[in-house]
Length: 263
Length: 263
DNA sequence: CCCTGTGAAGAGATTCACAGCG
DNA sequence: CGCTGTGAATCTCTTCACAGGG
Image (cartoon, rainbow over all chains, first blue to last red; front, side):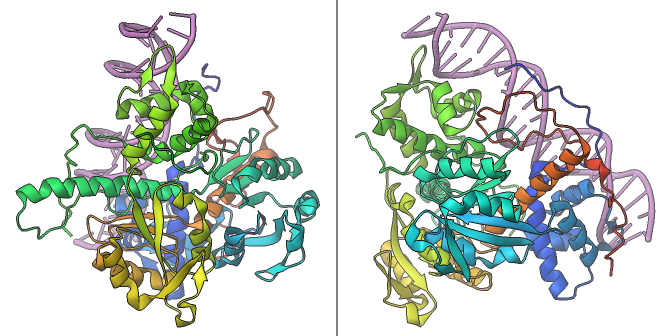
């Protein structure tokens, strides 16, 4: 693969690392909680603890945003809330459509975390004609036929796909064609999108599989540890405590199939 | 919690990088689909495309598992399905409990992807007495009082928390005390767990916030720079976004002093 | 040739550790 | 002093590029 893109010198002031971006919402949540308790300032140590990261990482993250702290004191909570909100683009309104109003879609429609962060559920869309007009979370479900109109009329740029895997790519194509440029995909499928469209996926079964991997490893170590540790006072500690992943742009694979298991 | 340096996961031959582990479920799904279509073998290039990653990464990933391919040919689909399943621990049964049967909990209970991968929903637990006995996804909901008993009787080591944020830590503590060592957390809160317990979180509003960040960035680029896209917008494997070639995001008229704010 | 498997180079992300300001 | 902000060291992940088996 030819390195088509020349590595840009990039002496930017706005080149926030992806890993940092992924943590900003975390800080924002912790800060919002402090704000509600009327806490005026926090140190990197305190805020880091509340957000579940270590303080060096937090300070480094904030250093990409600018110097918003005061040495010897800490950070001004309100000011930081504002700065992070602005950086994330949450100071503006983001109309969102949810396509596929099954169990998951309904749960998403009812999820309070959206509205409180500048996201507005502009419409719920489902392919089932029987769902049309039925209100979910106070919003009437509209038929897929209306998809393009809804997107355009509401200026929607973010779409959430909560359909079955088989319908996801088709829905995605229509969303993109209608102007959506960011997609949050809950369907267990790899979505193919044109350049310039951002896709993030949330795959429930993948998360469980990763847990299973670690769980299995723990079991193995335990067995090995029994031999040496007669009094298992301390639990088996194998690093890996709160781990978070979630990266930017990958997608999920296909279908849902019963596990195959060659003997 | 000593910040000990006690690590050193005793990496015998099992030194699989975390990033690789996170992709194994992806490969597994793609392979399972191929298996269903009775495809006997697949090249790294083909499989990578199906999984949405690049082939070099895939080959590197597989190299951590062993040499399961055949040069000049590719990988045997069935064999690889088995090897990955085994590595992930999916060849065994994992009883799982879901705590918090609201919209999301119900959606999870109904999610097909679990059962098909060796995960068995052993119980649904909710704090609302009115829910008790009510079947969700064919499984009767049990009251929180039964939590410890359920965990122990079923040998549950993986718990899913889908409660409101306020209840999450308490539920988490009880799960851990009862023997759960892996937790999938859907509540928008940071969970504190003892060493040895693995937590993964899925936060819907965080995903949207990350999308909003990129969406905002796109808008800024659009205004500041002309489109440079020369390549036909064909297919893209891995999504996009990650092309960090920041650009004129500098235009930020509000880079400094947002005027409004600092209370 | 076809492909896999992998050492080595490159990019990123995390952590360290301390200079320096309030 | 206490705490931020940051260069530098470290660790991890990704990508390159090619040796070598089929």
